[in-house]
Image (cartoon, rainbow, N blue to C red):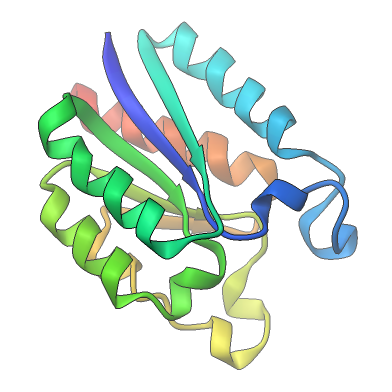
Length: 146
């Protein structure tokens, strides 16, 4: 089975509790369960990381080269717009990386419009709530099958 790392960035541990008008009522556990179900149907295993700390995310992505991870599904959250370190880790990973966001970042505040991660990812999916994650995993499934 191929392994996919799912990275949830800062404050995503508060899903279902914070700003439901933007992020919806689903919790991180809900999203992880939906991803696990889809992965299992497609012969993948998932490992999950939620961190509010940039270095933890950089380290996890950096380990993918050595631990046999086939792809990364990442919601860098606020680090999308600020983290050169995560951008560089994604660029160095040499495996497919798909960026996802629950909200449509292009329709939000101007500072959220630019992603540092998207230019070094295979693609970005945003604005579909928890479906963004599932669409992102489906993209990874297709990339790994190609």
